[in-house]
Length: 134
Image (cartoon, rainbow, N blue to C red):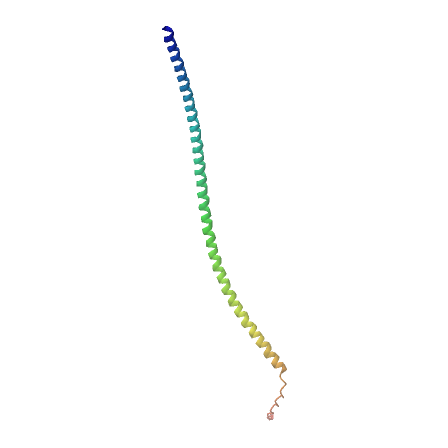
């Protein structure tokens, strides 16, 4: 009977050892999983910080581009006004040039007709009687 008691004790001891070994393996596995989770959390935090920095940089650049866009729109407005003024001045100058050309052509035509007109007989001068000088 002692053998069977010892057999049970040794069997219990082996079962206990197996349980302890299984528990140790489970604890090691849990520790590895915790380390992996901690590493992944750090990577996630780093990625979130990087994204926040990128977002902040993007917002800053976007604000700068909006300011530049406003400035360019202002310049376009000024240039549109200048263009409109230049077009009005050009139209006025073109009208004046056309009138001047027309006047020049009329003056040339008038001069040409005067040159081509037959000479008229000179009108005789009327003689005025002289008064004696004293």
